[in-house]
Amino acid sequence: MAAGCRDCETCTRSWLGRLFQNAAVGLMHVVTIGISYLVKKGFRRHCPQCKHLLSRHARRADGSFRD
Image (cartoon, rainbow, N blue to C red; front, side):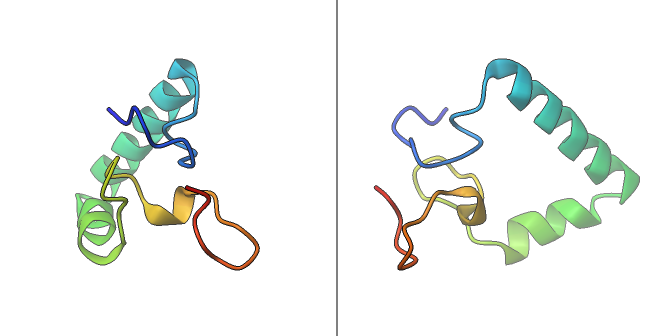
């Protein structure tokens, strides 16, 4: 999915970590009847490379991305 995105916490997790994260996020979307999905996709910025949230990417002290 995100072969070259080495600064993303989600892309660099183990397969088991991604499984638990996806299960928790899916449960949250079901419990909130999709409102959390709309907020995540509609109002949050995403990485153009891996499509994960930019807030989950590693940054330098000056705020720029490591890549």
